[in-house]
Image 1: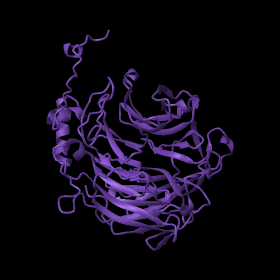
Image 2: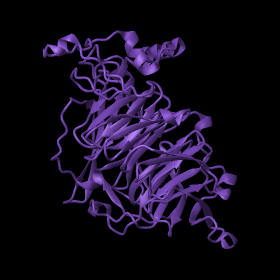
Image 3: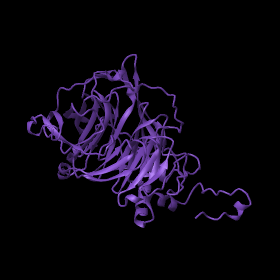
Length: 500
């Protein structure tokens, strides 16, 4: 039943719209991210007190990037006895030095690795870094947006004893195609999304150093060679898979028809083909990215929809917001209990994990109208880059976020300070540009420009044309949170250590 009109509306006088106060109460701000339980509010205040004062300035208490020779604890060091000595790929010239495939170079505060081919995706678990690559005979300096993604797939597994990085395994997929997305599972499994739209699962990585051929389970079970391993192919719905993530021990898959499904990938369930738990329609277009915490799944799609799926009750699935832009990267930050996503206009936005509460994070005081399921809130921008953001990674050890852009820059952001502190201190810096990768088509040489300075809030320049090979394709944090890695389409991966 429609509501009765007010007396002021009957007199055809405009209604007064009361704006929320610019500096809302701190308790209301904390409830927006942590809810109403006193224990969670106390935990949130501790996070704010501990991490809210990290500033990105050269003269104050900043988050220093420390030299790469900082020793890790003995219990974190892997025992590397051997490595693959020969591997295919392309040489890359970086800062005047030629790097062969899988060769590393130590810089003052970082380690640079040449993987040999363009990096499509990567993930880091324990001491293992797994890298998905596009195998091509074309030199990375000549790659462009028309590269063929349907070539043979290649996964490289590196053992990290930073600053040392050594190649342990090469996994070749001659029949399944290139791998657009790869994710480690909680028990060491490796899930892959192929360019053909299929999803595969490796239950283990080879224990011995060497190159292996990966074949689909059931194809040649009786004739597998010693250098071959099996991959289970996940039975999906009648649509092409585009993205994956893990929610505890369950594998979540997003499709090009806008559906999201969750699977119990226990080996017995895989053999019986009874592994699908549920399927939810989240959008009418391609699911571009999935992120999950213990009880929720956050999806983004090409049509601009962001959706939160409540695992405890699928009826509570909500489309929390719709933008005019699509997102290529997302993550979950447990310290501010929020999902983060980057749109193609250079902004990083926050969606509090509390059901349907969306924070527009715009610079002005305009509120985001999110429909009947969303509360109107006002907040500041988490980050505004000058180019399209192609990679975003959050850490389990601190509230810092690392992002990568299409024009080759990598940024470090203090999400806690921006979300919980700086709406009272607008001039306080919350992010910095760590470095930028540049490329010369004239000399076929790359160089890293060390920036590490506070960046101003600039509008993205959509007409900015940069070489395609400096595109940051993926960023990941080491599980202990002290190192992060950024991969590029040139095949270079750079590791940086932060003092936090």
